[in-house]
Image (cartoon, rainbow, N blue to C red; front, top):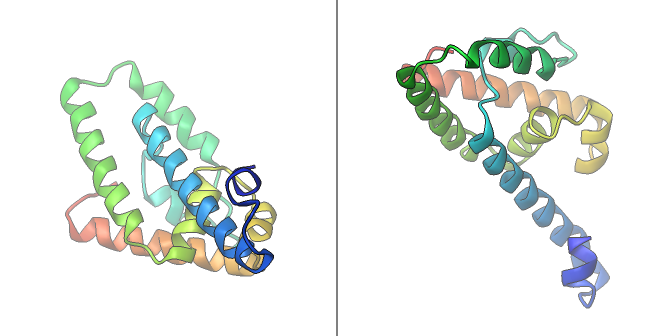
Length: 148
């Protein structure tokens, strides 16, 4: 809708590039809004334990967060917010395709096929991009002393 509304007068050859930019910006905007509402990460190792096929159940992570939120202290909430800021910084530093695949899969909760269609690549590429993103995030956060 944004593409048609804002760029309907642009040449057809420019539309794919504009669509990718709109998709990327919209995904990042949604991520930022969602981050302020709740923390989606309880443990980065949950991503690493995803099988070879890249399966990951975000609902299990959310359930464990919801169960623990009622007893969270102010210090814990502050530490969690700081960790989330570090995660956001590291996500911004991922290569574009990895960031795009990671956000679509884990924030937009799109399945592999939907993500592949949106990115214009194969399902295998989506799995590879997500796996590399998870490993890069894990390594970067571990280097900062963040153990999730």
